[in-house]
Structures are given as structure tokens and as C-alpha cells.
Amino acid sequence: MIVISNAIPERVLITGGAGFIGSHLIDALLSAGRYVTILDNMSNGNQRWLDTVIKNRNLEFIEGDLSDESIILTAMKSQQQVWHLAGNADIPLGFSNTRIDLDSAVYGTRNILEAMVHEGVKEILFASSGSVYGTLAEENVTEKSGPLYPLSMYAAGKIAAEAFIASYANLFGIQSWIFRFGNVLGSRMSRGAIRDFALRLATNPSVLTILGDGTQEKSYFLIDDCIEGMMWLLSNVSFEQEKNVEIYNLGNPKVTSIRTIAANVVKAMGLSNVVFEYTKKKAWPGDQPVVRLDVSKVKTLGWSPKVNSDAAVSRAAEQMVDYLNLGER
Ligand SMILES: NC(=O)c1ccc[n+]([C@@H]2O[C@H](COP(=O)([O-])OP(=O)(O)OC[C@H]3O[C@@H](n4cnc5c(N)ncnc54)[C@H](O)[C@@H]3O)[C@@H](O)[C@H]2O)c1
Image 1 (tube, rainbow, N blue to C red):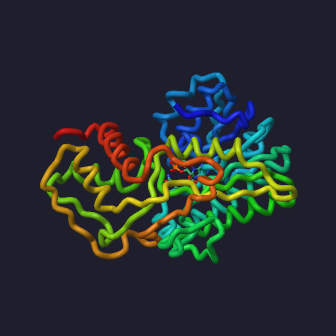
Image 2: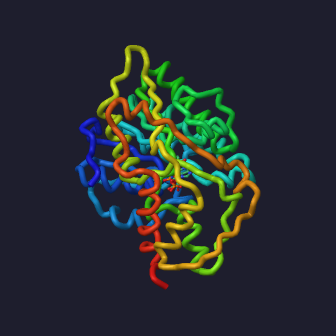
């Protein structure tokens, strides 16, 4: 059960509310009696999550793209706070479609901010990513680490979006919470190693091909912790005079290796003697093989994830196998 912050006003706009993280947020906000508007172009939204809430009288769903300024203005009317989660979340896609992150993350975020100014909405929470740190993330990275050299169009888009949010915060007094997530886990994920391994093993339960050389290790945390962390910060951060933007790394301080992820999925599926093969090269263009987030800024304030990285992977592997109906074959 996610604890909803008292700092969430009555009316909230969630961009990307039909996606993985957004759909969980919608469920939590509706249960807490908030009026929620979703703006989503359904490029990666899931109708299944929408169907469970669409009849709720406190929900308005607007199908629209971040490039459509007039639909954004309609969605922004009477809102008090924006959770901006929409955008391309498929990092490899930016290698073949070099416009998608520019359009959704950069122009899209700018369009949201313009509409906020137009409608007098003064609070934004933004889903950024640990990808902004590039190779710096091989060591523990704090929110002050830099300079930031992105390895992917996705990361470049997040850095640019953060920069525009900071500028609007300064010029128009919009209070801005920027969250740089580690890898978020849950059964509603539409991509990622856990889902990929489960589907591969369903096809071939003897051999699992793992992209990369097997040395990758990243910070993972569960969706409930992700949402609770954001809620907690919303309630507990007070902005200094004249400073309207705060950035937080959100995730677990320890990392989990790709081999441990594979072993957890094998276990969750009730398999044994699976041979792991590696493709040896970089998993995909723009990948960061190692992501270590220093999360002491939020920890010092008083919040940490309830479930550590290894336990989050183990739990998410079980949930995913269950969700895909792939257990005990
Ligand atoms: N899941 C993670 O591990 C993770 C980690 C770091 C950051 N993030 C960020 O969190 C946010 C949510 O991630 P997610 O995992 O729920 O992804 P997701 O793909 O499940 O959700 C994104 C939603 O945005 C919608 N969308 C995409 N482009 C759009 C556009 N141009 N206009 C309107 N809607 C659009 C999609 O249809 C989808 O419903 C993203 O911004 C992502 O970059 C996620």
C-alpha cells in the first residue's frame, strides 16, 4: 500500500499515465481520492491498466501527443500539479530513430512547461534517469557529479529536459522535483532484462543468451519504492529562497549483476541446468553497463527504499513469471 503525500493537491495531470510507472501512480492517486487527468499517446501505454480505472469518475483520459500544444493546453486546464512521465523510454530506439528523444523529451517537455505557465500551474515532478551520468555512473554518482556526457539520445533528451525545467523554474517560479531513477521493477514493465529473460527461457529453457559480456551491474528498485520515494520527497523538500528546483537520485545504493538477474528468473520459472551464453559486445548502442547511484542525499533527509536491489530483482522475477504465466514448466 503506497502512502500518498498530503502535498498532492486535488487535481493532478499525469503525462505517460498509461505506462508502467504512470499506471501505478494513477492507481495510488485514485485510491486516495484525487482527480487525475492522464495525457498519453498510447505509443507504449497499456490498455489493460486503463481498463481497470477508466470508469472511475475522478479520472479523465486524454489520448494525445506531447507535440500537440493545443491538446496539452486542454489537459492543463484547472490542474494544480504535473507529474511528467511521458516520453520515449526505449533507449536503443534512439539509435535508429534519432529524432524520437528530441521530440518527446525536449520539445515535449518544453510544451508541458509552456502550458503550465499559460495556465498558472506551479509544480512539476519529472521522471529523469541515472542515464544522464553516462560513464560517470561506473563510480558512485551524486546529484553533483559532472560534467554530464550522455551515451544515448535518451540520456541527452533527459539532460535537456532537466535544463528546460530548471530554466522555467527560475524564470516563472515553477517548483520542480527532478528524480534520476535507477532501474524500476514491477510486473507491468514492458521491457528490461527480467521480462526479456523470462520470454527467452519460455522459448528455450536450456540456453539463455544474455546481451553483453556478463559483467553488467546496475541499481534496481521496486515500483512501490519508486512512487513512495517521490511522494516522500514531495512532502519533505522545502525549496530554498529563490531556488525552485531540486534533483534527487532515487534507487538502491547497491547493484545487482546481470548473472544474478538471470539466475533469479531461472529460479522463478522452476528451471535448472540452464546454460548462460554471452554476446560479448555492448548489450545495445547507448547502454551503460554499470550504474552505481549514490542515494545519500535522500537517505540523509530520512528516506530509503524498503527493498534492496537483489531482493527487488528476486521479487520482480517472481512477479513477472507469474504475470506472464510462465511458472513451473
Ligand atoms: N522504468 C524505468 O526503469 C525508468 C528508469 C528511469 C527513468 N524512467 C522514466 O520514467 C518515465 C516512465 O517510464 P516507464 O517505464 O513507465 O515507461 P513507459 O514506456 O511504460 O511509459 C511511458 C508512457 O509515455 C507515453 N508516451 C511516450 N511518448 C509520448 C508522447 N510523445 N506523447 C504522449 N505520451 C507519450 C507512452 O505511451 C507510455 O504510456 C519515462 O520518462 C522514463 O524515461 C523510467
